[in-house]
Length: 116
Image (cartoon, rainbow, N blue to C red; front, side, top):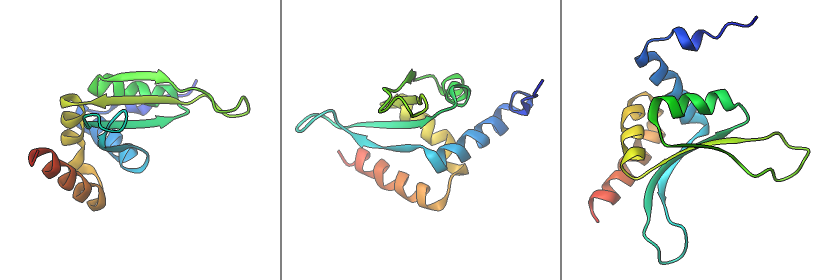
């Protein structure tokens, strides 16, 4: 049987692990659901491993769901998403462990939110 050492990590090390994955595969920013609609800060990550998406849900809450398959040949994908204050809190916790490029983007988006 395979062992998963993630479960043995401290909460801080789990946060660092999730932050690294999010840095490479996740996204955050201001999005709206249509032209002229209010933009909301959101954070999201998508992958084929449901257990990985479950880790984001367990750490941060938010929403976890299957995505619609684009083609039957493709693997089922899973997505985690947080929006509003929850998304802001999630990214705020992860940002110090992310790349400089992500940190710079976050500070631009954050200043855009504050200036509104």
